[in-house]
Image (cartoon, rainbow, N blue to C red; front, side):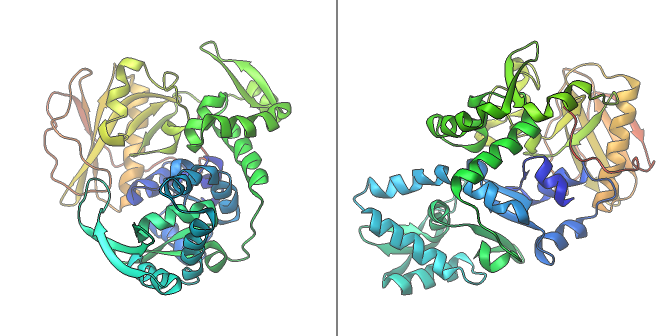
Length: 405
């Protein structure tokens, strides 16, 4: 499980339930308790802000690579403060106070209190809870601006490494990496950038410079500096659709790779696999992008067959049973449907649910509502069914290190 989280370039974790399912679809036999144990007890997995300054679960031993390798993205927050009249020394003092306060797990309330004391500043509050919320959040008045404590965590990303811990209940806590991760080892930013690009090309290649910039959230010019340093290690390949680059050391293995077909996976919301490239046409036709990439940044759960998105899906739980509802973009063969049922069985096992029923909509029809992965709801709106099967078979044995390309 820990190796898988690194092999796929981190597990997108803005939605905690989806992060667990991203691991479960790749590691057969995984249980939710396994993930929780790795995040809280052994700390072999850690949740951090890295690519695009979004939350990801990554191996503890690679935290510095993922965070330091994308730290130039946090420079945008530094620039925001500098453009409002703060000196470099003032910004550094603000970030240092935040990092100093995180020698133990802290909620954002505790962060605001501690940073206020360290700066001799006023602890206050201001509207802004994220996702359009206007609720009051803990903040610190420093100079002419009032900084939400949660936003300071992003500012600190330009200077240090902050981890998000499970906390208690639904209240997350935050702590410095050196105070949380056993045997913590930091690495210089250039080394982290190079190692991160190697990891990216290994999981997402063939890729282009603009894809790496998009994936990391770096400015194109910053990504280009990293890319140019590793060009001697790359090999150009032609996929038939466009030219891209892979690690030259991986070329032989890629050319000889043979994967079983069909390879079927049910990927949850925000899965890392569908967030690797700026140009998504290798995954699905442009005319269908809106079915996967939804408004306001939401990424729908994807039905993946042989590395391409051929539909979307959702699940609903009613009592002890679960319905997995699939909306294919086109006809599906019986072998693909069998694969969907195996995946649905594995989903039910992971969730600790009873019998699982798969419901296939006819291509071209849409379900009336989309059910949030990880949310329990009544199974409604499963109309225009092309087929509905009760399964109850166990999932396939063996561990899957990564979704096949």
